Image (cartoon, rainbow, N blue to C red):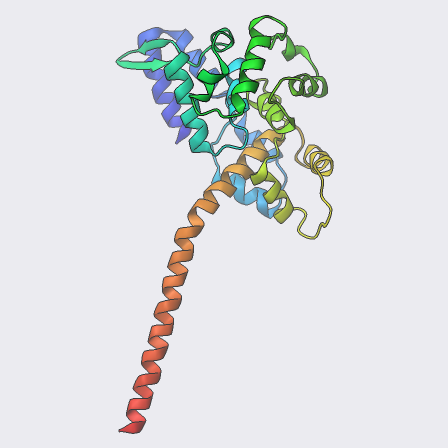
Length: 275
């Protein structure tokens, strides 16, 4: 489904804007990733197999480095819907207007544009305490103190360490940026959702399970395509949880119906004996 949608969109762009647009779309959605080989390389266990089957076709996109970093700084302790709202607010207030065919869009603001504003203005976009971190990081990037492009030449260990030096960036955000902006497909971000999945599916009897142990396990067990494994497990867990309330209501309704039929059966039995 995703491949067909992207192919259709890129075909339209190609007709109007040429080969460059086609290449840009294909690169952004990582259509060159050998998805079948990547999925085949993932561990063969019940949790991973269920997630892989559920998420068939899902890809790790290639995001612009600053946009990716800024968005994940804004995402700390926020739900997906809130992150979308923040991103939209930043675009509408600080982004530039661009026209694509008949559509009007607003770009994500550059580090320099964010650096020129104030913490108060960023808080008005719904960032809360994250405004201070985003502003401080934007200023470091805008002044050249931090060169995100040069980070690309670093090893995974050094890249993670450099990212964690930035305000608002911890291990989870650093791994997200490594995965989506620097294409380090081994990176395995661990948030609340993923930690819950790991505990339930891979360490059901473990009493002591710290961040270091989880990190070591994911690096060794999921291997060079751990980022794909993480995204599949994450998406499957979120969607499964979203579906549970409806399933629970249906099961509750069935129980009520069974009790009603049982009660009606008892009453009918008593009525016959009384007669």
